[in-house]
Amino acid sequence: MIDKDLDEVYTLKQIPGAVGETYREDGMVVMEYSSPSMEVHELRHGGQNARNELIITGRGESPAWKGGLGHLDRLSMEVDAYKAQFGFSAGSMPKSRNHGGYSFGSINRKYLQGLYDASGNLLYPGI
Ligand SMILES: [Zn+2]
Image 1 (cartoon, rainbow, N blue to C red):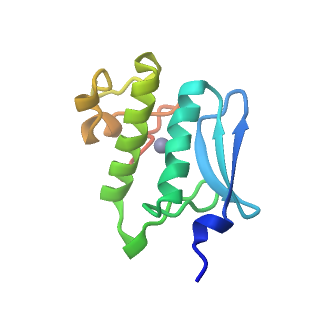
Image 2: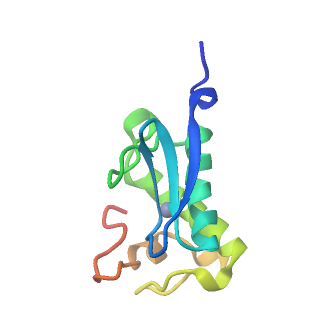
């Protein structure tokens, strides 16, 4: 039996203005970012895939989880990645309508529920 991790290729793609996303494309796990703090965040998602904590899927798609679990796993995945980002650069944390993001302990579901994109849409509506 071949461990899937041995076959997978990971690549980092820096694109100015990128919002940050890790996705699977052409058989590779692509970690797309624009800033160093976003790179740390997306690297965490690549690591989560490598550790089989989730399965990164196509661009714009929600990652899949072993066992078909849902929003609670998405929540823990993002809390993990935002904590890594916070550890690298506390000042890089996005502003949340619900506040938080100013300490490890305040990076939680409420914080994530208040994050929004440039158009004002919630980033994680399913959480
Ligand atoms: Zn993330």
